[in-house]
Length: 137
Image (cartoon, rainbow, N blue to C red; front, side, top):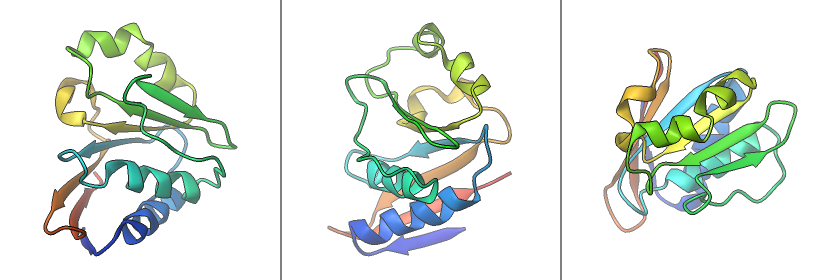
């Protein structure tokens, strides 16, 4: 599925639509350059999961946890040097906790994703417009 959004609020709404469909244990891999809309989309996923907290990028903490009936684990791989570092912080444990794992900068850790991972690719097509391609297996 390919979507075009014209502002940040539209990107958030598209994330919310996806968030409403996610089941416990889902992994969403986000790809795209800086400022492409990954965090805005994750805010929408959180809204779709009925998480009322402010979602921010976990660039310096690597992962932010948002408790809810189905918790959200929001990862940012930008500062990781290798996939091994992700396992050092407990990637497998997060997968086993029954929440939703959303991973920004997924291109940094391509070997960690299972076949059923949902891939979301963001392309800036203008100052405010984004092309968002969602692939579900």
